[in-house]
Image 1 (tube, rainbow, N blue to C red):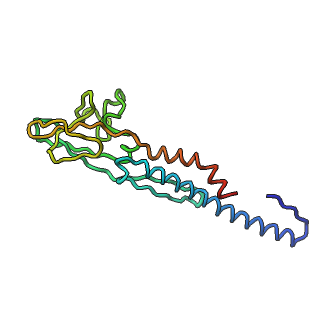
Image 2 (spheres, rainbow, N blue to C red):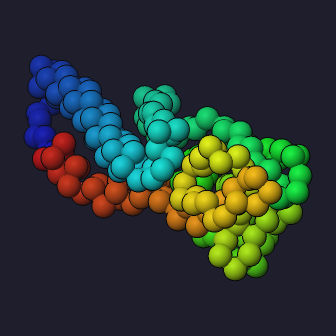
Image 3 (cartoon, helix red, strand yellow):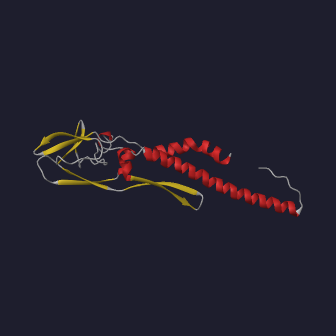
Length: 191
């Protein structure tokens, strides 16, 4: 933007009005630009929630009219299972679907970093596991989030083996999509 102006008071006044109008227009365009980037991020994150997408919500929040934040939240789920084939003792664990979607769980957890995890944790003491992943015992009618399949019946209960959940990384992919779209959206908004 380039202005040429004389020292006449009318020309200076017009210049000040033009600059203020430009500032207002620029601020409006910055907001549109940030909103469009946030929309792209939320759209990509929503598509990458995997089995847990129904439990995750995304929203935006403005701070001081200059910063927009994408927020992801998920409810905490309580899972129940029998700790072993010879007991009726039920174990429970709170899981956070957003963490499981972002980082994976079960068989896909990294061995040697806190053990092989299950149900969204890396707590090696909370779950039984073998070479095929983690498992638990449950009534025959129980189902599980994720890729669990019954293995066999033991003492009237089914042994379930989970392959775990591979990370789908909704937030990481949202950030990458925003980075990839910055130039295109800026061109569209600012011209």
